Length: 198
Image (tube, rainbow, N blue to C red; front, side, top):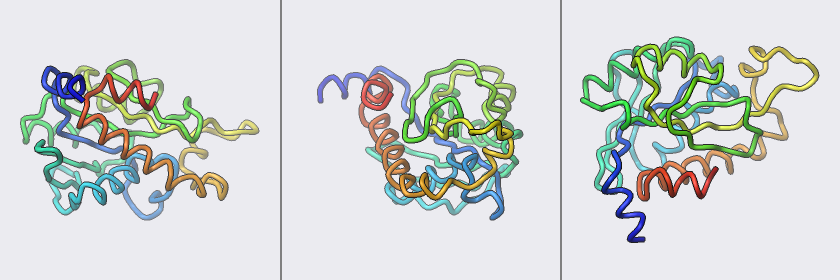
């Protein structure tokens, strides 16, 4: 416990958590909207309602473990996620290294998540938009594995499709694990979270 408290004291606190997705009912339960689904799950556990609108974001403000938290769902389409998140960060004076971005990742198998510090966009257009908007990539990412499509199915159609019936059975547990990871990150820091969930 002391090690976790020490880590929390010396590193920047995460205070803006943004999930990536596409707005509208058409995309609500698709693989590409994993970020939105996780933000909703965090909202429920932390009791932070998503009830505000600003800079084309739906977002909520709250407190968790004495830290002020912003939960955001940018309402531009995925490929243009960067500007709304940047505008919200500037308004609330949040630096890039105090941001956690949650997004789907085809390079991670379903039923796994990974916390990543910095790095390239890996071909993810939402992350690319954020990197361009912020002009750096110092934000942390929680990558939610959706796996790659089978049988040469086009990637764009796969990510915009709903979870399969088999995956749907595991989804609730995956969302719970993702929220557990965010809670661990906020309470004990990045190193502890990576050791436990990566």
